[in-house]
Length: 231
Image (cartoon, rainbow, N blue to C red; front, side, top):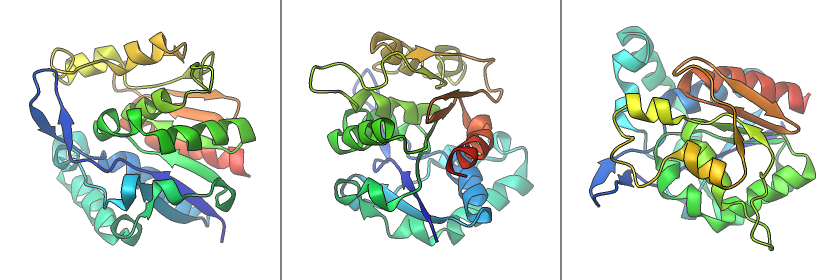
């Protein structure tokens, strides 16, 4: 069975501008929706995190109000509980890209803390980009693109069109004034072209082998586009 690599945050806290720690992790829907799509298509999932840390779900992503009601919230939680891959991640630094048909990064605020500055993740992303390996990234996981720098100091994704969690969404979520930096701003500063859609609506941008999504609602559409790249 062909394998898809899930690169996930290893942190459960996000450091805000005032130094306080906000509980976070990965966003449930952004892991569950693609997981279900990839498994249904016959792919094995391997989870990788920095140092092989078991990833933490952001508890706020399990709330009924962000999952369309209690019934779906319970379903999402049930899928997470069944995902044995989450309990035995491999070390990101030990990953060989040749073992995988595609790479996928789910979001949550966690990547803003660790993957945005993780050199191992940055090298993996650059290698995936340059080799043509299908690469999917959703929401705040686009922060990981910031660590993908080349030897000349430029960002590997410079000039690429992407979708990512927007300043408008961060403001509506209540964190724009609390964050050390905003994802849309930082990506733009790195030369990446952020193509913002309407807040909270699905928005998927495809540029060469890169498929990106703006927010949780974009998770399933990103997975569908990524599967087209693998086929």
